Image (cartoon, rainbow, N blue to C red):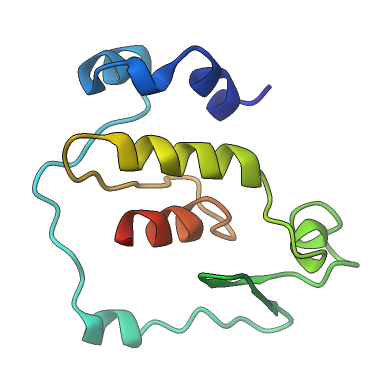
Length: 123
């Protein structure tokens, strides 16, 4: 099991946010985050040479051609999100919090966690 599955299986939904933070020193909540303006976001171009746009219901994400990356991009080429189950469960956890929360994916590469979670907490 990966970290997300393990945390969720021990009942993270029932944990208080402070308990969750004590148990996972690599996770923290940013108080009073300031969003980027729409103008700043529009100026960012995610397109990179030799990348493929994969479309999902609520978002699109660039990845590599499936023949180059059979793991993550290969899954997306089949219409499946990489670690889709854990991402969905973490989204549900974020929605269950009593106050607004932001998600910061320090190791984001393709964004297979950060892009779906951004869509989730935007709802």
